[in-house]
Each structure stands twice: as C-alpha cells, then as structure tokens.
Length: 305
Image 1: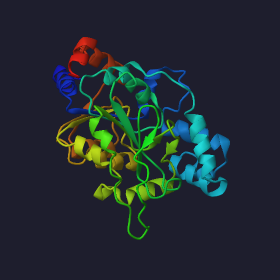
Image 2: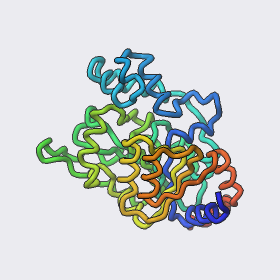
Image 3: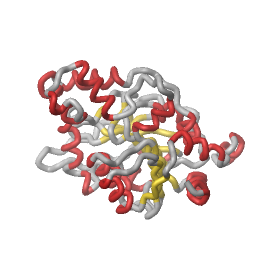
C-alpha cells in the first residue's frame, strides 16, 4: 500500500467524504476465538447444524436458508440466525476508530452482527436503518431505529403487490442525525431483521436497479462520496450487486482492502467500479490508519459545534 493511498483515505475520512462499507471479514479483528460467524461459509454451517438440508446446497447460504424456511417455517430461520449472532462481542479497534471520526455521515455494514452499533454508542447523534424481509414485514423495505432500539416511522401503508412498493419515507428526525448506520441485510439487533433466504433477495433484487429498496437518506448521503470496503469480498454475484447499487451515483474513486488475490470476477468488478485494491491484511491496514492520527476527543467535540 502506497503512502499516497493511505493519505488519500485519511483525508477523505477526516473530511467526511468517505463512506466505510464493512463486510463479515471485519470480525477477523475480534480474534481467533470470535464466537460470531465471520463468513457466509461459517454462517451456513451454523444453520445446517440446526436443520438438515440437501447436500448440494449445504454450502449455499441463501439456498440453505430458503430450504429451511420452506420446510421448517420462517421462524426457524430467524431463530437460527438470532442464535448465531447472539453472543455479545465488543467492537474492534477498527470499529472504534471509525466511530470516533469527527465527520461520519454514513456507515454501511453488510453483515448481521451489531459491532458497529456498539461502537457508535459513543456518538451523541446517530441512528440506523435496516433492510427487512418481505416474508415478515410485507410492504416495507427498511425499518428505522433510534440508538435505544426504538423503531420510528411506523405506519406507512403498504401498496398492493401489483402496484409495487414505494420507498419508505425517512422519519424527519433522521435529518438531524450526524451519522446514519445502514445495514442492508438487517441485523441481530435491535429487532432480529434478516435478509438471508433466496426469497428475501429476489424481492429486493427485482427493485434494486431502480433503487427502490435503497433508503432515501442513503441515496442522498452517497452522492459525490468515496467508499472504503473493509472485510468484503466480491466473488459472489449477490455481494457485487449490493455493493454496485449502494455505490450508485457516488464518486469515481474508491478503495477496497483486499489482501487475497482477486478472482477474475472480483478484478473485473474493481475495475468497473473504479475501486483501488489495497493489498494489505485488514489488521495491518487498521493499524496504519490508526497511526495516521485519528482526531483527539477535544477535536471531535469541537467539530460538533
């Protein structure tokens, strides 16, 4: 990683023009004994340990979740997901570093744990928006929550299936939040919302090209900003689709910490989306970013006034 790249990332982060996009790999920083699934492979192993599925889909997370939902009920999937992410794990150094930035308008977290929420608890003004499953919340794409877990903006009427569902209007108080945490796949907390089965994703993907499932505040905040992908891989088509649609209409310069050699599909995706690959282990990158002087508490508080 060049000094120029780390300085550019540091500058964008400090100015509030960088949007961190966290994937399951960030949990590797929680240590080798982390009780949470740190990959789709580990998570599908947790699900299939509680309910048997055909061998040919045992390693396919969304297909395995769909099979369990079809033959064991959606509640079985929700419980298995909640159990997998139930352990309380403190935020890592990287989570804390990001949460301590003076300007952090948007943080995207594309996994099911709650470490970013725990890290953001130090901030005076923030809230979260999570994707929700149509199987459990028909008529809603997302739910908004305050930091205390209270859902807000309840009561938007659902359109009929033939009309399609409009994007949910953001509650007015969202405009006052200094940081919005966007969890497109849902999260174990505060309400155990999960997009994980084939049906969950089909519902979203039928509309995502026209951006309907993307919350309006996210669409506004991403304009002209850069993305920094941490703990993400793009070998899976679903991961690429979500990243591409969430990035839409942002800037033309982004970064991804990706120490492993990219697959052909990943390399093509990085090139298409103008994402510079940072060939460095995530722990080393986090250490380098921390050394590039994070703001002091006094500076952070001063920036609020």
